[in-house]
Length: 159
Image 1 (cartoon, rainbow, N blue to C red):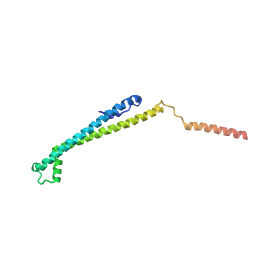
Image 2 (tube, rainbow, N blue to C red):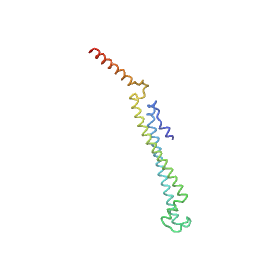
Image 3 (tube, one colour):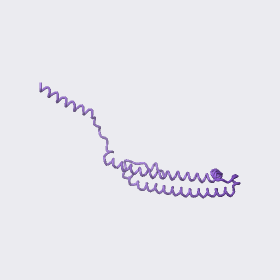
Image 4 (cartoon, helix red, strand yellow):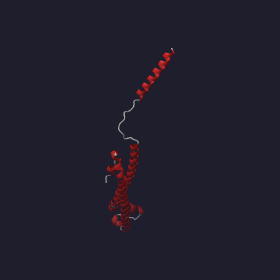
């Protein structure tokens, strides 16, 4: 999935973008749900591995180099166990993937809002062809000259 590419909007074909929006959103919502499910499964596997290693440390402390079985010693040994760190890395990777998938779903909500606003702008002729901007300062000078000439003509009549 290339969500960065799928998020792009072609302003010149808003109708097609709207037709694709719902299916794109659903695809990423499904992907997000699958990523969350995967995270839950990886967490469960991690908890099982952690419990097994914890149990082994308590039953066979000498094979782990633990001289005195305390909670601190068990936690320290657990954190340095290769199987534990490998399982924990899988949890981190799955969490990252779930977070990214969730962010993609949020981005598609923002895409929907952007499409709505683009359609509003289109309805207000925002994307219409270029118009020649009026030079207000020039028009103001012309109007002032007319007013000045009218005042001058009135003054000359009164003399």
